[in-house]
Length: 234
Ligand SMILES: O=c1ccn([C@@H]2O[C@H](COP(=O)(O)O)[C@@H](O)[C@H]2O)c(=O)[nH]1
Image (cartoon, rainbow, N blue to C red; front, side, top):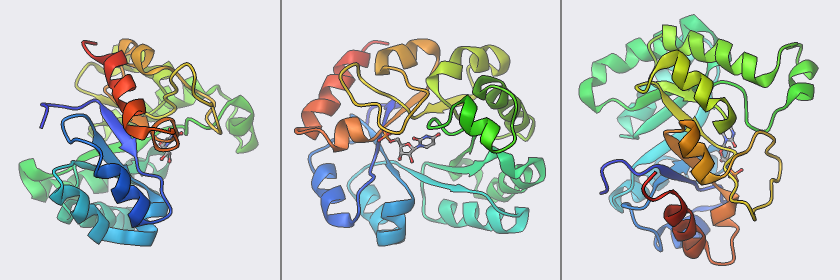
């Protein structure tokens, strides 16, 4: 495997068959894979094991958000699955994030990276106002990223638009995982805070989460290779 592939393909498929059909055209040197709520709810741990058996590292994107006891047990279950990365919602609060971090310590160096979702990339100012948050997405992301860093997690999910500020605030070791990646010709869809792959890496993103621009493309492998070429050398 390439030392640290930057592209994470989001396997947002309704079942295992189309997911594996795509995966079998991909190469673990080119990308990692993300399994989210839809596919995991359908196909579960067995699917994660199938991906790992094909040589891929897996980001289990279940965005846990619950009381500390429940959430820390869930991230331990993810660690037992051998995933590369797992996440929780930062808005679950400091005690919840600390419980998760502490629980993963028993897995030693083999533990998954633990990151926290700040503000979903589909959300803008109006969405935040709708849930009673009267600051901009950028301010709320900074606030939740600071809390995440204080709790000792490995990084956050944010949009690439917030990356320059977060890198300045938390340094290069604090991983920034950025969905909302859109090549210039791709549909924005339901995403609001977007950036192109090359601009996102230049802004400080560590990992680019890319779903529909690859999975819904007429030729997914060609779409992925074009993105790979766009970011090569950055
Ligand atoms: O803030 C977030 C957190 C997670 N996601 C997930 O990333 C992918 C993006 O898919 P696209 O098709 O490229 O929009 C998807 O699985 C989301 O659940 C996010 O978009 N934003």
